[in-house]
Image (cartoon, rainbow, N blue to C red):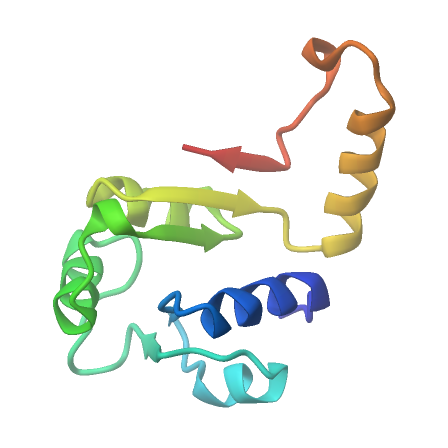
Length: 130
């Protein structure tokens, strides 16, 4: 797990503005969220009894949405693996954003894209937004 300070600051800022922040990991995440200083309203893992399934099983996302009172159309899932996070979101009709795991790779690639004049030539495979 990486500590992406900009992402954490952004999520904490959204939380301070009243946006519900829900963390869902296939692995226990409560201590990690606390260590990162991430303000989260809910923290779930696949081994939690109320979740009961691993990503990308749609039942896990459905259970989480039921507990949090959120509809898929109200959510944006941010993850780092299309085969797990992206599919989990797709399975319930949720928007998603897939980021490469390493924040400095994302920044470097984004800077390269900004410098280009022809945006059609810019490879944005490091970020996928449904």
